[in-house]
Length: 448
Image (cartoon, rainbow, N blue to C red; front, top):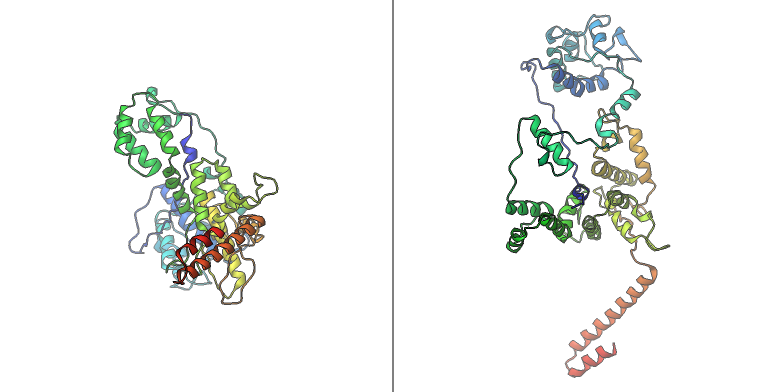
């Protein structure tokens, strides 16, 4: 089977939020290994230094002759001498200053939190590990961060050599086997046909195979029996429903923003159209580039028929419209910025695998994302109009609705609805009039 299943799978972005452990000054962990200590410095210490210290004690300003932007500068110190004594927090002037218990009280803008003080205490107790290379400028740091492997273009890797190449059935198998061999492990024995069928059925459709499907697979002795099972499962509507649902989780799909039920102001009554579009896109094996571009700009992509509206692409932009933002806020301009923020957030999380929303207020400390990047992307969505006009303060907003049929089709539908209303009224009159003969109803319906 030549089909690449990986292209058919929509992966969810998993966000892991790490929390700094609550340390106490009298319970300092033992000295960590150099790499661990360096990581601790980069993740915990440097951000505090950057936010609270280097403005007054950095490259542009050195109050009291002190710089805190390198380990060497800390050991050299300022007018009061060295500010750190590696492995001895109690003798370090830096700890005394940030605890604000003596004549030195730093930073002047306000005392650090107990958690931040404990970070410095632990860092010094570990030896004040700091890669004392010349610190790069913010621009250099941004460039270095963007050189991280996750931001580099994807490249094709060469399959590694393995000890038992006969086990390899695809290039991916070679990478799996190489890792197993590196750990001194061997592959597990092949699964039985019954187990294999159950696994692939659950994977692709979320459902177990029927007894009939099991019997047919066991009876099929041809070499491509498994490939035929996969083709059958991929053609099943259950495949699109199962894997399309994962994408709907990523894009915060909902039918209503009102937890009290349908019929409220927070309903998204047409969201089902987007849901069905996603399921059908997965089912039809839509190329990922087309899948993404339709959801971001499908309404302005050309339709298959010249001059016609791109109905399918317009429905796909429900990706941007199913947003969870405040409705009815007195600050109407803030509603617009919240809408754009939600759209930037869903694109960055769902497609880029990044949390860009934080850059609404400040540059990212670790990811190579700046506030300039955020508003560069936000500017695109500020030029759109998801709200046709502002309602009075305190009133709820109604998002823009776009007709998905032509004016001619709408006119025909309206005429048909008027006629249906007339027929319903006639039928009601007949039902409520006992003097009418039984043939009257059928006659009127024939005339209609």
